[in-house]
Image (cartoon, rainbow, N blue to C red; front, top):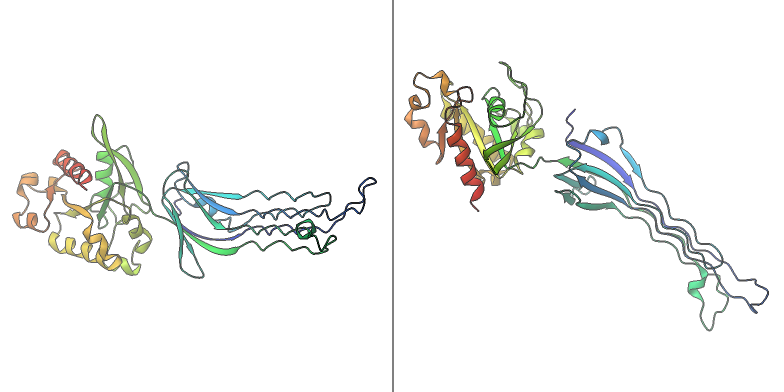
Length: 327
């Protein structure tokens, strides 16, 4: 099951209270304060790991709480700090505070860590308050409260190349032709219901990560079809490949619709490096060479391909490698 968005409630541990105690040893005249400090409460930390690919582990684990620190004790014994609680998530997650809407941080690569709730500080024991004028203080402080908040975790897949197109535009067939990924292929819309990652080989020592985004339809930026749930995965792609079916009545109009949906979702994505792949050229007599010449003017980089006959795929890969290699 592919889950890319969850909301969890995290609560850090409270700090331990300070202690009031006095020494009562036989050979220590007048004794003195010996109350220790309380320990720190445990924090809640989100850490990125390459071992996970979805947030399904957090779907039914909505409340995560760290332990409180130990209280201080006599004989100047400080309470132990509580252990932190670490939440493993896939690489590429964005963390937001639900109440304020502010971004807490991002965990993009293996080992990235963000503290989403800090543990409370330990209280001070009366030993801390001893002075020359106050030899027997009875003052102490309670441990601080741990932070508590609702955190929205959103996974945005990290890939070099994102395939953008309408349902049945040939995205799944293309990723199967370029990589070892095996998404479902059928002759009905929305066959792909979750993003699919694959590694495409461009040479003996060259490769790139490609992601098949579920099909976009008009109104996707408002949530129609797969909508915004999957448009977010386009954000982290370095290059976008727009797949346009040449067997449609007006392929250029379908290209403009895709660009419009991308613009309405996030205008900055229109500045992303991109290429147009005219798919299903095998349905034309003459293959890619029979494509209407006007379609080559809809974008500055247009290539005709057929994932079935593999016509034009080498050229598409070389175009992609060129775009990935340019700053």
